[in-house]
Image (cartoon, rainbow over all chains, first blue to last red; front, side, top):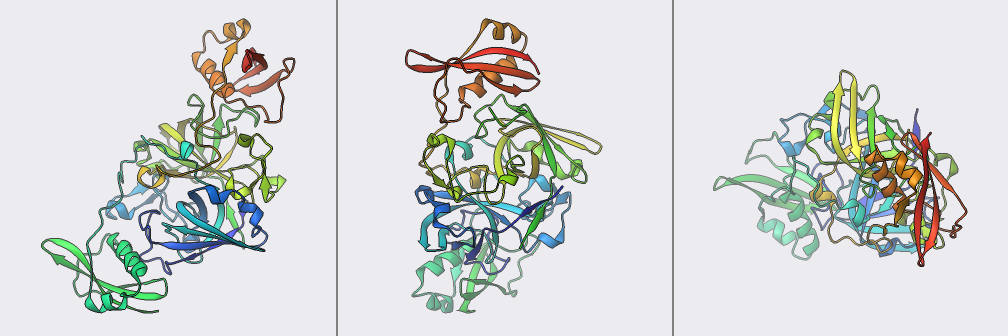
Length: 232
Length: 232
């Protein structure tokens, strides 16, 4: 028994590659994106009333993982990468059906004839992600106050981020991008098994910029220094 | 562009038909069910760690609606059936991809060799529903306290339910079923456009029983009287 699903929209995201894309929505509030409905779903009627909702669920395809199959046990990065969990006890991207769900803030809806653009923030989806459904967030049913998830009780502790003088200069006229970089890197996007190597340069494309950074051990605390921000 | 999804489990539910199945999870706490994983997903390893989670998301197929297509505007029953909303502003079952999501309480997990049964409650899924994914509920990310959904700010007001003497007698030794019937009927499963007709008898199959009931106007309030509870 199989069911077909078809994209109804694609994501235009500030995250251009998997590395440095956050693992949960909502943490990087500065992460903006646009959900652009495609034909025949690009009818403004299909989102009538949605503008009054503060948050929406996106159901989407982990399109960069879909061909890699699944395993009964996975190593979630939040557990340091050395504890194996059942795939259904995690939100891992490699799962039997490569479907994800993310709740994001709906900032505004832009409609023209045959064009529906949902402007969202708090996004954790990579550019080009196919969206298969959009549903309103219904607090009385979705916000379960006393629910218990033992493996991540709260958002990860942010890591301090410092900007080099060169990076500060490059970002002087773009406070939004600086805040985005700060929020993204403070989540520590490194694979959990990487040890601190002060000479190793990391890089990721955010919006239309290449951002590079290094990790430093300072007073026994790891800090991130943003080295360069160059046009992509 | 199309993606295949395949069931990983099927629901064994107390709701045997669409009519009287609640429109949201969590409201009928007495609604019990079992999510039974099917091969090759029926490996106890796949749910390792899940037993410590209080709630789970089920992603599933609206299998009884899938062939009926979708429309850009729908009439949600919660709005009295006379207001049309964009399909993506609702959780309507008839949507471009007939995928639903429900958060339910995970009571316990029963595993044997090649058998994984998730016992859940607060279910709003009909018997035989194909489940395509199971994910843990992660409160810090899923429970958005200040989210706003203007069309249903809170759970619907329950309607008073009375049991006829015959129904009381039939339920004397089954307090759980009585509570289930009470919770299900107090949601008023009637189509919104039905007017009170004291002679009309409604019926639905719950667990292994046929339940029949009528609506009465008493002191300008509608009450439900459960007439009969007979073996199905």
